[in-house]
Structures are given as C-alpha cells and as structure tokens.
Image (cartoon, rainbow, N blue to C red; front, side):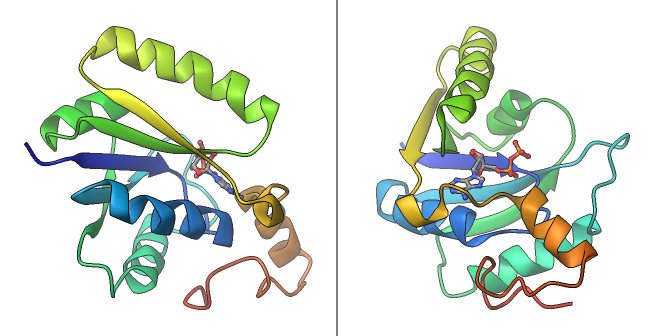
Length: 152
Ligand code: ADP
C-alpha cells in the first residue's frame, strides 16, 4: 500500500520552517499532499490561490509532493485521498499541547490514521507565519524567513 501523508496547514504564507519539514519528510512517504485547510469564516491574509501557487513553485522539483486545498475535517480529507498519515511539525511545548489534542481526537475519529511529528530544526523554532505577516504589514524584509519563491 502506498504511504500517503497529508501535511495540513494554513501556509499563509509558507515559511522556511514548513519547507524544511516537508523536505525532510520526502524520503519517508511515497506521496505528501501539502493541503491548505480553507475556512470560509477565516479568509486569511493571502488568497488561497496565491498560497497554492507558492507551494507549487517551492516543490516544483519534487514529483512526490502534491499541493491542494480542502474544506471540512482533515480526517475526512485524508480518507478521500487514501492517506494513512498526517504530518505535522513541532516547534515548542505549546505546539505539543495543541497537537496532542488534535492528534488524539483525529485518532478517535479515524483510528487507522497516524499523526507523524517531525521536530523543527533549531534555527526555525521561532518562525511562524503570523510573525512573517507582521513583518509584511510593517514593510520589513521577509527574505530570511520564506522560500525564495514567495514573492508578491
Ligand atoms: P496552523 O494553520 O495549524 O497554524 P501552520 O499553517 O502555521 O499551522 O503550520 C502547519 C504545520 O507546520 C504545523 O504542524 C506547524 O507546527 C508546522 N510549522 C509551522 N511553522 C513551523 C516551523 N517554523 N518549523 C517547523 N514546523 C512548523
């Protein structure tokens, strides 16, 4: 059976932290679907189409990485895609507490799915999409924090 992982998130925008987690996970899975969870009540900072395009550009050279968006429950999306794994990154103990409850509830809803966590690389521990958005709002330079394909 193919090992398919979904990496769900907002990617608003994708950061070097996300990029590193996905790149490190490539050898672990036959396919990784980087999927933007769309919530109609929270439109986000960048339009979903732009976020999708950046993800496609960043992983253009990696045929096992697909990019998509979805609405609704992540586990339902995983079922649709025949994905047995959810991939997430862990930065801090706060991430752990948040991820633990989501991961345990997801497991209850869909017992055959496993959530796999990769620890962030130390240099990306402080990096969040929301900090990147703040830098953009104040006209700062985001190039150290995002993949070079993220341009607007
Ligand atoms: P959310 O929409 O849940 O806030 P994000 O879209 O920011 O999540 O991130 C999706 C996933 O990427 C999460 O598992 C998050 O922990 C991980 N992640 C975010 N930033 C980093 C980073 N700097 N290093 C490693 N993982 C990260």
